[in-house]
Length: 273
Image (cartoon, rainbow, N blue to C red; front, side, top):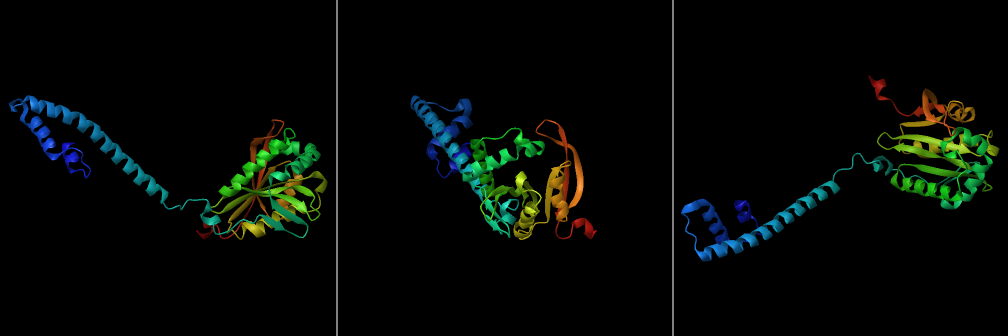
């Protein structure tokens, strides 16, 4: 420790004092101690302990700063935004019949009105619809969704027709930018079903976001009994990869089987073997 202190660039103890301390330990009982020497050793002792502690604390802080600095500059090869940063998700998409807008808190009253209108159907499939949510609860959900958008984890749109009538929700519920892979989710007000509107919205997500972003996989999940929802991926050329049995609970607490539909783009690695 004495050697470390002597070589330290900010050593607070004089070198002759260090030599005195070293001689004391080396000489053992043969070392002649005068009263002045004892007093000096006592003073050195307290000064040395206090200042050595400050040095080691400073060293620890310097090491911690270097560690933090190295962490901050660590390559982000696993960052979810590496792939996504090359493609900016549009906040508004327009089709022949629809306008898809990034969700806004101001949309909450319209959303609640549509959920109330469609509650008899929604309560069969969606666990978030065990009861009709309040406007305040919907606003909080939208705030979380908007925060996830900024993180690059979730991109949800509200759907309007060209007369600005609120129709429902669609978007990328889940994203893995390393693949990239996407999962599409959606719901449509009961009075608007049967017109191909959601198929149009899902196809827009594929052609305007998934494919331009370099997506290799896009999937859709729905309840096995939800015939209308399953008709959309079937119509758009998705493949039924399987059924997850008892994968989730319905709003009534009953187990549900989940169908997994998917499209892949590019050549899977297994096909190259």
